[in-house]
Length: 294
Image (cartoon, rainbow, N blue to C red; front, side):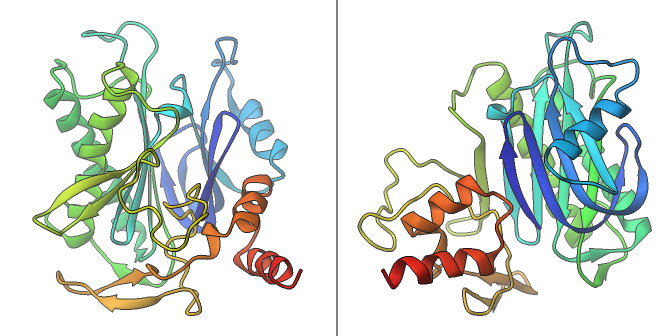
């Protein structure tokens, strides 16, 4: 899996088995997931052709799942919890259901789910969304246009995704926390210039940590002059053993450790990836080699 923003759209790319409750939803193999911020004149009566155009403009043809929202992508919240990554946008106009609003959630697992587990993942995320909305003081559990995509890659490791399973715990936690943080940004309670990135940490007790580039206390974590545009790596977990390795988790299983990777911190590599967001790791490695030889 990898993701990037292009204008008003979040794109997530991979070799997914996915289930979607959005427009043209269902359960099937797809290579592209997206969440798009629509303009006021968007054709809500028949959004299908417009969604085809969104994917085609980026050069993505074939199967996809897409979601639509009025929320700007600068309010997007991205959350990493072990093998689960969640992308959340949330907007509610007021204490009632009148006006523009939508809560969209895309979850991706680097560990495979059965079809049934993917459907159960949608139930788990929907439960978390409702609990989060009520925790924010609203008298309802969602909006009429909310949508969820649950996607996975890799060999099947999870046959269930209820809230008491290891997969479900991570899905619920990411959606519950992510919806609240996304609503805070939509309501103006938290100001950010771009998307917010969170990692679930177990150091000093389980908690979510937000990474912000401004005044990072760890700079420089690798070398002077490093670029931090991609501190929250869009390739994670890349599984490239030249860049990282698997380590045992304190909670069982394994997690991908790439703390020593400097690839995306190299200024020429960061510039190339910002210009060509679909660039592969191999292509980026060649950019580094070329710049290193000049």
